[in-house]
Length: 475
Image (tube, rainbow, N blue to C red):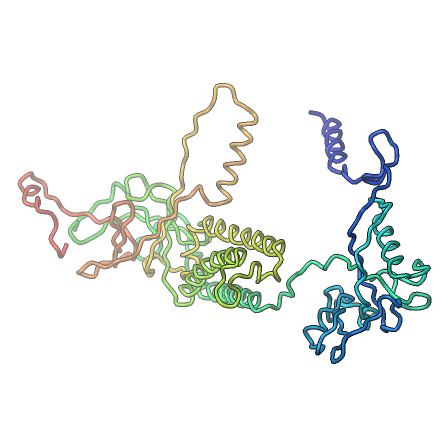
């Protein structure tokens, strides 16, 4: 497909995307299928909007209030024994607005009496507002209302305008101020977690400087018999003299943490040893601050899921306490706002869970301090995974590109390596060791390196049979 074809298709899609279903060239229901204007029709029992004034004396004569003795005309447009604050707050001329959301021009408005429902003989569906105003104005005996009566939020009282129709616009969409108690709790919990992780990252960087400097000073691939304290490669030709007491560590290859993944102390191990070629090991030890950070991440993840459960319960009005039976109480009784909040928080929770899944091989050890393998509480073995791919007789370019993308994504996500963290243990005799892939690696106190442990099984069948009951508890 050429460049011009791509441009053509892009322009075509853009034109289709910009198509609107709005009626631009005619009014809905004004013309019939043949283009003729629809006949007027009668509409009965039409409700009139309240007429609002700043002084009740400005109301038309037929709409001026008159209450029985001992009663007063209140802001809700009715007569009451007492105009309480709750009654005054129900002023229809305020259009369900209060405080800063109420225009200053509407603060002093009070309603006249209710206009009875009217019947419109010639109702134009495409011009219904004008028809309703005219019919209601005629019912209230208002003359020349086009100049003396305005519309709420469009023309206010002043000059020739003596009153306004309380045709309230749609109520503003409710939204959070983001200073509600539950939002403050979300900020506090997640902010504390972020601060804790930042403090740990800074501390970890300073605490590991000595280990990294000591390891980087050694040259990768150099033989060292007496004290690299790095990881080792056990050679199949190692000559063991005292096999009952000494691990096989005759030949060792060390490498610097700066040359290994994640800055860990590493080594390449041969096929005859327990660790395969391309496997790196590094030492770690726990720290109270790192442990707290890991537990905090787990707790916050659970809290995110619980928050989704709270929003779900609120959607069905099942929250306990005074909120029980009230739908969408956390979102100002707006189902749209609650659903939008749920979707956004669900997306955040999904990203958190996916991130934890991707970082799972590294997460726990990140919150431990890096040490040399001989000094740590844990040893992390990182082994390169090799895949066997079957090639097609006729290579497919699309399949080739997909495979390349998948391989790069796999490498980026670290899925081309297997991470195994092994705890370092001690035998009853005080030997330090760890077990990896069903093989025990024991620390040689002399060389400060780990190597597979070997036992002398003897040089004859009789000696071998004598050991049929296995090793002793001490061994």
